[in-house]
Length: 152
Image (cartoon, rainbow, N blue to C red; front, side, top):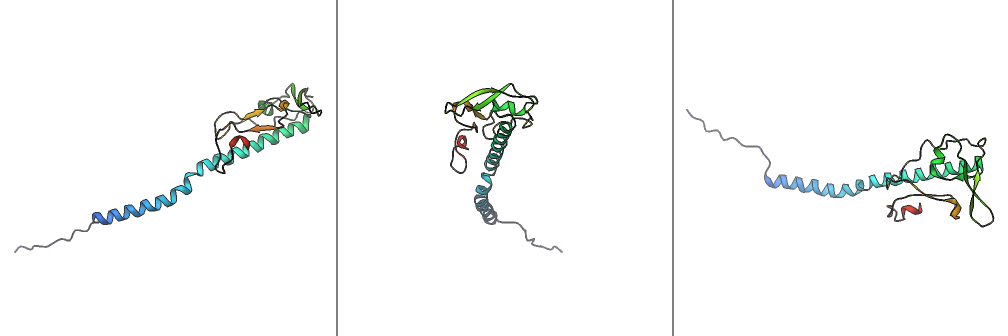
């Protein structure tokens, strides 16, 4: 006696698989833009935070010694640098001034990091040009908010 049992094959059809793939693709298109800028956004947040830290350290040095640093590496120095820059107050810009080592309370930062956007050293606009306490990004281009990095 022979039985001819028909087996029913359980499987997905090609159409069902294509529908699932299309649904996954549509969801990916909706979700991906939300995550695409996260890396850039975190770098920009790090840039703003680092700029604030360096500017505050330079202001603290000015409060302690009466002069701004002559170069950014002075902020991380464990000994007082010989000179810094001070506003002449006469509208003539900035001039070098000696630093009294007894007023030095540095280092003001543990190290001077690189710009998180460009990976290069921060730009330091020497104070004696009359530009003020200008520590700014060395990155070119604009941030996600449309403003140039070097204006932050």
